[in-house]
Length: 108
Length: 312
Image (cartoon, rainbow over all chains, first blue to last red):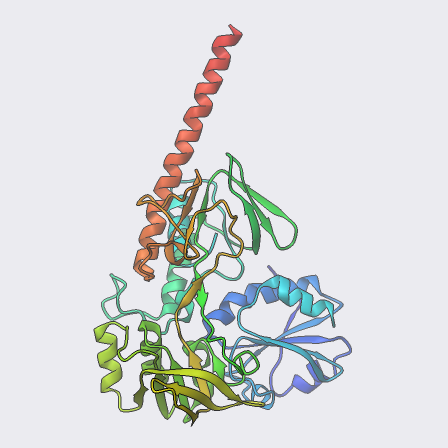
């Protein structure tokens, strides 16, 4: 599936792309060495396509961008945080199913 | 159903047999092996191999013969009769003549106060995923089996100290894994003790431990890795399927009690829960599936021939 709807954010552009986003934004905090992150990857890509125009879906590599996960107290990955208006609306840790993530996005 | 080593091997064999095969998983294929730091007992890799890399290789190998792992979350199934139906979370369903169930198992929780609230904030179920977040910290590993002891040693790459907290007076882990832990100066043990609570508000500050003599004690830790075995991923299985303690019972051909339905790997009752045995199960189950399909076809041919005779 195409990753067209997925954005990749870093410590540098997190504020502009996520906190100041007009749309709610789900950020998937992941790392290349994390198995469950890899497992959930295609689910996030599918959600990005299905929620295009409603929720922005972003991925942040915690290896390359350690400051933001530190700020949000992330000590387990994958952690997916849903931001709205710069605030944390909801979050989930672990390779949860697509239905659970979709339900979380519906609330945004 | 399920893309761990059991499902991938069954898929590989089925693809090579040119059966019309779908491998379905709720995420990317790989299974529990994706969260195993290092595998030293899978033959063919004399120096061992990382779980991540082994999963990648298995997926690549199955893909080479045309197997397409597909994303989908099976929520219920109808397995009786010649056409099996798998119902998906998005209200679609799949039909198959035969089903190999390889849904595996998931890490157990301790089910103690503080655990759910602090998951992701110091409580972890995956050392390979989260070890790097605990650089130079003091962490606890709860459990005494292979996974707990092996991952405790793995964590010493990052953390200052690891304390293994185990309910029994001796570890259940394989001797060679225990040796590595005993030799590692960063690993210490608290045995015959149970974690009864995890403390902290915004992040883990420590655990409450109950010793064998009934005394309770608080021990400070910045991280708690819960590695206390696994439970079968069986919530989508229909009640007609015979289980033993939640795991699917099979015969030596991997056949369940329902005709045309096989089970492999960690979801299977007699599994020794190893990558190699899951892969072996997968190969056996695919051969059984082939025989079952041939049998179905033969029956159909007989019916058709009978029809031909009667129409004359």
